[in-house]
Length: 95
Image (cartoon, rainbow, N blue to C red; front, top):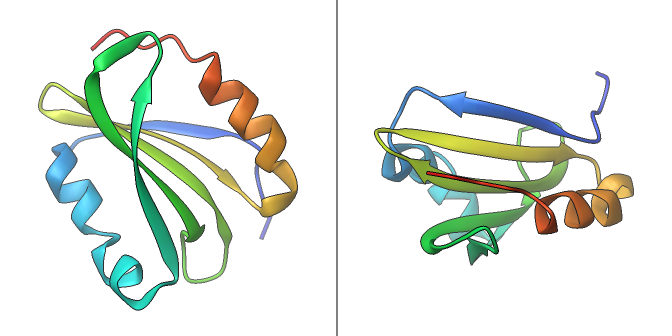
């Protein structure tokens, strides 16, 4: 039950599939979705999701397409929001 300030993962699924896993919660309003672009790769369009990211945790997730995989960066808990925003703002991403 530990909440982490920052986690990241290269998911072995394409961006559309990973984003689709959150579609139900977006539709019900448990998660808010917005487009996201990294300053280091402005041509790559990803998504930022804020809200109930797992059945037991709230937080924020940034998803970015990475060839045939997905880069997933997230925080578990609203207490880490300011730190998370600072980290993703300085993220260097080369697709």
